[in-house]
Amino acid sequence: MAFAFEKLVVYQKSVDFADAICQRTEFFTRGYGFLVDQLNRASVSIAANIAEGNGRFTKPDRRHFFGIARGSVQECVPLLELARRRNLIDDACHADLKGRLEEVSRMLSGLINGLDNRDA
Image 1 (cartoon, rainbow, N blue to C red):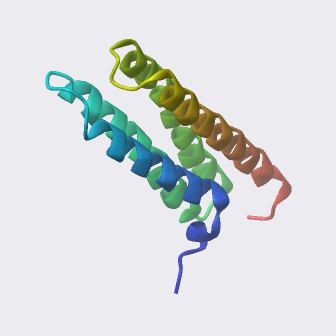
Image 2: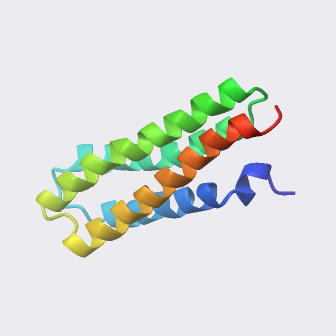
Image 3: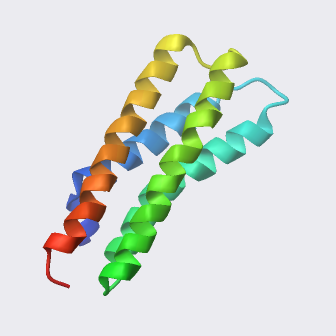
């Protein structure tokens, strides 16, 4: 039996994003462990907070965790930019990953805004 949040496209896309980050950071050069760690933690936090928020019973609790997920999306942006500037990822990879973040961010905003239109 699947958990309800596993059916959410935003959750699926956030897991795909975290997986892509794990694959990319595996090849970062030595000396950038701090960036690998922070980028992996932030990307996993997106999906984890969507899951946790979906398990909460009240709208304010769900909104709180979905907001944390959206904050983690924002956290990934400067980390990806630094990875691009340090030539750890190329411009095409940066554009792809940032585009994924923009999509997840829009979906999270819709999820948060939609809470007001649903019953608790």
